[in-house]
Length: 228
Image (cartoon, rainbow, N blue to C red; front, side):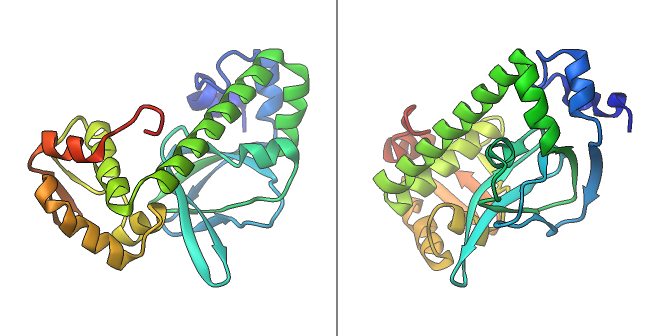
């Protein structure tokens, strides 16, 4: 495939400042693949052969241990994943599967490491992206360790409220069982948490969230710029 096929990602912060020659080298051997919903693309414990970029659709990163599974994060358009494993040439620490039909750009990891060593602006962009991911991990850890399950749910609802154009009624972007896993809860605890949020201005009907009192919800959630 020619470099022109990858112009959709050329202006992303990770690739925007690198030279055209470096971008040509980076995308040599890269390809685009369409995946149906619920398709596992990579498996934890396997080699990180490609850097993945979500061109369209939705991807969940998850992990399993001793017959248990947890959702780590959900990624949308223009998100990259498995960057750290790509740079370190290490095994994947997480698995990835599509939550809906998705179009994924896959760039050989050896290309990423080679261009990193020769293009200073790309190297700086890699450091910036890894730093952003590290800070996101710290925020998520603080959210899990410092807040109760109901507080985590309240802040998640507020985040989605802002992400969806400050809508007071919206559809949850993921299934409730996946949301429960992401928030460190069981599905039963999530159901109880939704009920406990009714006095704080939240109604739920299936996948539909309705914020009936934004001020009360905000006062209960106490969103914090150092966490959220």
